[in-house]
Amino acid sequence: MFRGAFVAIVTPFKDGKVDEDSLRSLIDFQIEQGTHGIVPCGTTGESATLSFEEHERVVEITVEHVNGRVPVIAGTGSNNTAEAIRLTKHAKNVGADGVLMICPYYNKPTQEGLYRHFEKVAASVDIPIILYNIPGRTAVNMEPATIEKLSRIDNIVGVKEASGSIKQIMEIVAKCGDDFAVLSGEDYITYPLLSVGGKGVISVVSNIAPKDMADMCNFALQGNWDEARKLSYKLLPLCNILFCETNPVPVKAALGMMGKIPSDEVRLPLVSLSDSNRTKLQTVLKDYGLI
Image 1: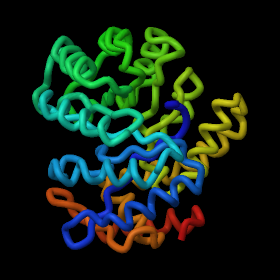
Image 2: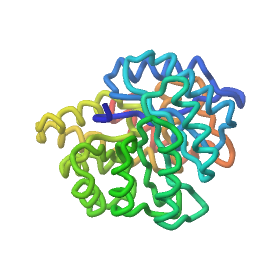
Image 3: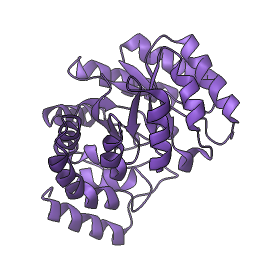
């Protein structure tokens, strides 16, 4: 189930509120373009600034509107284990196919603390769990040995790996085996990850170029490495420009330029894309043929 290109979908806002109609429109665009799954309420979905009620509503809308067309993996992570359990129970109750759980941020737990956090959630809610290791956001790196230990828990089925280290990715693949889905958490590293046994990506770039990212994963998973490599290099300028400022600021600006959302509004403490980077983004999108 957890193979290919999954979009870490943005949460559209309009006048300070979740723009539910635009969210539904983005979901349809993704599925029409061949995305393998939808991931609401991740970092790209600005989960950190959503209220519990908004978070749960976005997951509900996504599950309802996808209507079984592709898997939905709901972001349910928190640095508070009890809150993570609450959000994960809600995702299961509304019919999500799995959940994505970030390492607890700010607390800086030990490896044993990380293990117990995820173990507790897995024991509390019977739903497939994908771990999310992103040291740049959490200030802690979940080590391959810890991921291996967690992979032995039946409903922990994969990891979104965003350490940026191919060495670490290869260790995880080697330790956890082929049944454990190692997914890229960095768009630019997706092709190398696939080449060493990874299964796909949870992607920011898929918000604006879903077909190319999905096709790149399809080619790689079919063993057509030449075509996959061509698409990887085609996508590289998007991978670079969409992180010129903090995600999801650039990707929301891109979706606005493409006419996919009526407003590229983000919530404080994030602010709109700077004028200089907006000009650079516009150039890259034009060169790619997206606007």
